[in-house]
Length: 616
Image (cartoon, rainbow, N blue to C red; front, top):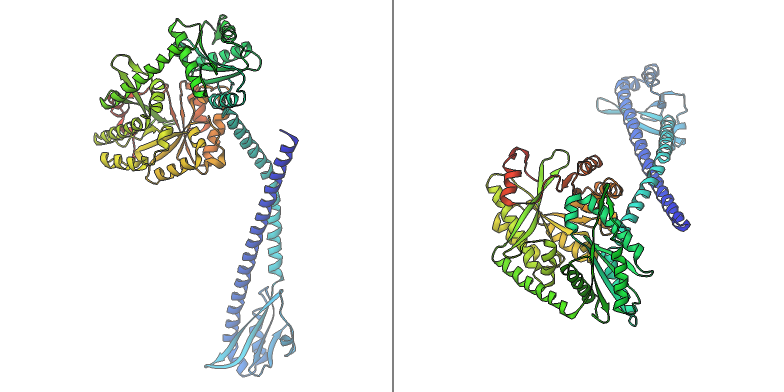
């Protein structure tokens, strides 16, 4: 931390402490004032009651001016420590008896200030006023008692601040550290430490805009058969492989080039100032050569290869999106040619775009012909293991290609404008299924549905959800909508307005993939949400670096009274850490894979119906 930042933080802490001290002192002063007024009022009320008793018992003695009897009546007041003087006078103002002894005119001349108070009561006999009882109260004892209370309050306040200031400093330091970490993760990949897709998009657009006279190359690299490696070693082993892959690429690439992890097992390198396609190919082959040495993962020697595609700017494309699409097409060409090689983009590869268009058409048909279905992955209470809900995940079984992964067809749906219709189908189907389970006596099962970027900009979404809930007679609380953190950050005001409209309908709202963007606590306070879903990359990094950021997210959520779900939980060690850290719900392969509706009901609803209770 810089000296200036440290100084600013110290000043802010000091300012906050001074403000808190001032508020505490003002509050304490107000309480003491109220206490003083209350005690003074009680003392005067007690004295007035005593004056009335004396008046009642001395009426006859005053009438006959029996000074001795009147004096004996006054003597009963001497035991009251707050009464410093008393007198009884007749109607003419003549003092019949008094203590301490005063001249008749003395009390009239003497002003009773802050240190005293006077009360009086008429003396009546058979309805006729025959005199007056007047008492003068000594308030100094009351003041001393209040001063003692004030002293005790100040001592307690000093002790409290001596304890609170270091605690406040530590809390602020932790919040600053968490926000710094979240800001870092907005631009860097938490698994490999390389720059992420957000940074890639920004850098590529900026580079092409500023360096128009210089040829550049975009290389996209994908680890061959990574899914098989991931299935064999698990996500933890897969993440370790990706870390080592990133390190080897960074060590082999040219000085000045930029490396990014785009997601999954895909990396991109922006090559600056490339003389020719051959130079770009040579640089790419040098990178692939780094894969010849085996990787050591979890004590095992593992040999993997990679495929790379290259597209040149401005030779192959004029825009960043087109350049990235061409490099991606070239990379898949390298895979089709046998993997472990480099392919340069060629115009014929645009046929891949034609295939993409064909898949778009087939996806539309699949939506109409009910080839799509939802699978449900359970979300359970971390402590009790009770089912708390499930996430509805879209699946497509192509009649020729078989299962098509969402990562393959969701981007196509987004590109062709089908994503809103597809998203509406998911919402309707999830609501229909939850209502069906309820009708079958399984209780209310809350289902979570992901909203795409396009859906968050759909003005008709709230009205559509209203119609679906009415059609299925499903309670609004059984539907949970998940919005990714990056969507909220890109168009915050529009997203917040949409969330407010949805929340007003009684829907549950969650931020998905939390931690991959940059949401400060002050920003989260603005969001009408119920839940955070910790991104699985952090969970996969437990034990390890993921523990710190997960703990920070849980602390932030706790302060904002938000529920938390950790997704991607695969090991007992991850489960134990999350339970001890205070994470309320978990989701992942350790609990169960996503299942079709009938299998989900058989596994989670029919076997233990006693576990479920009505959702609030």
